[in-house]
Amino acid sequence: MRVTNPIAKIGEELAAEYLRKKGYKIIDRNFRKGYGEVDIVAIEDPNSSEKTLVFVEVKTRTSNLYGSPLEAINYWKLKTIIKTAQYYKLIHPNLPDALRIDAISVELFHANKPKEIKHIKNIST
Image (cartoon, rainbow, N blue to C red):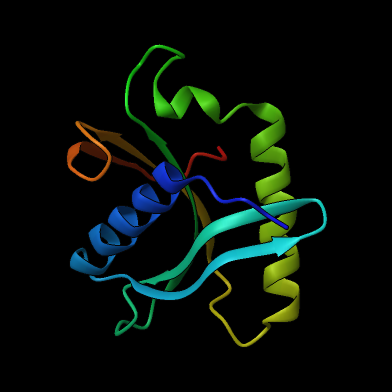
């Protein structure tokens, strides 16, 4: 039985809402493959001819005691995100060919009130 982190779940909900407000179309959440997971899969500019398939890693923290949320995305984490994203695209060939990996950092005041949301585009380069 998988126990989910309630803070992470709140952060992912806030990140998904943030992306929707920015015009992204969320097409999948918490896609898992044996070696990794992608928190949010979205299409940027879904109404334009230059759509981009975006894989988003969401990191949520209630304090910086153990570092900022973005510091938790290390080389190995990014490597598994890339591998999972490639697999996702392989099994969904009808989605846009342009791919990108983004990160969203969510810092909370309390369990459900965002202090700050940062969106970093293209973290894989």
